[in-house]
Image (tube, rainbow, N blue to C red):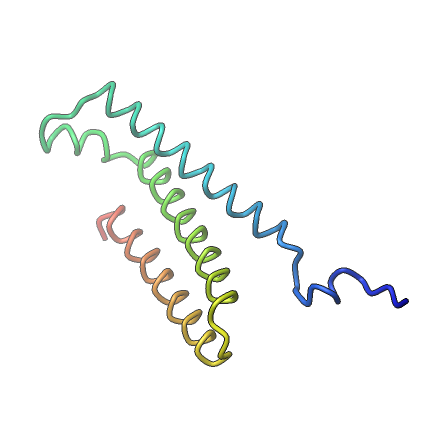
Length: 119
């Protein structure tokens, strides 16, 4: 009987624990942000545009929002990567879809920075 290392049997670079941990970490960041925003909105209860500007016009809110958006993009990338690897068998199509997804997520991240810092 030949004892192969588990990586050789699985045929993958990772065992999945890194991806699993990344998904949970990004989900936790998004959950904390969501709970914080719900709490803030319950306390402040903005009625008009000027009150919304007062809430969102500071760097703490911008960094928190950007961190949450980046977590969302990483979370989406990992999820789409799993789906593409599992269900798209032709290698060229899978690589093209990965490239398109990565390009879209990077564009969304840059766009988010432009929106948050009003550039």
